[in-house]
Image (cartoon, rainbow, N blue to C red; front, top):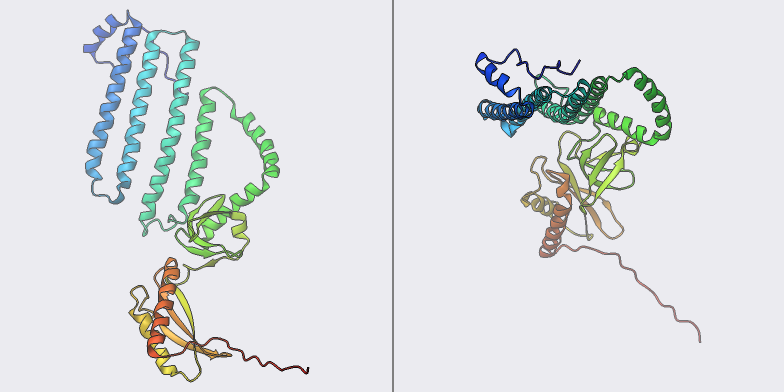
Length: 368
């Protein structure tokens, strides 16, 4: 099915031009020399063809952003060159004049290597194709950043399955018996790898439901907080503010409460600054001072605008809260620090006291 029909060592191929038939017949008396020439010519044609495809195809895709089409074109050119090299190698083997069994084994080995190489190219091409489809939002809305891993996995499974079937056919192995054995083995593996399968299915659900996406800042039940750097099929990776990467199994992510600080209507994150001032302070002055400090900060968003709320009467202070927004959750720590520093200095300059708990201790003298 896959092998090229055997070719007699002395007979030129039917597609050979008439001008080359005489040289072919002359070199056919020296099979190794003819085989080497066929192989060299075939590889040369493959290399030249690859360069021409990249040259002319590169001109057509020169204006494409991110070079996705160029990378896809390079994969196509490499595949075409591999096929030409395979054809020339098969022809060289047939020219040498091996026995039928040896010739068949050598051709099957070459074809198997070609299939294995094509698997890698097909996987890369499928991933790049999904990226290209993801850019066309008005026509392929189902293919987007969060669903690309799901489609990528499905295509990978299909490619590997097709390649495995092709390899079995190349070596005349009946795939039916293997499929039946795989069913029995699959049941045993299912019981032995329940946790792995749970993570696998949870990964599908997370990708489909998208409670979070790459770049989001999330907080887990255990208190871990970080940026989502990878949403895989088995696990999710978080990069904390300490630059430590946490790998969490998807089964745990699917069964825990997740606080997505980057969710909602926008990515902006609200900061709460609690400030206490002494009783007797001018509350209007305090509100105006806090709002002015937040509005003057370069990183604090002006839409929504900063606001101040009085939260209550504490044991020793009037409790206020400054509410403002930053463009991204990662800015929360540094902006909070800067605002506290500015507020403390401004309150001191305005003569507004920041109270602290005080206790009077009375010492009662005992009788001698």
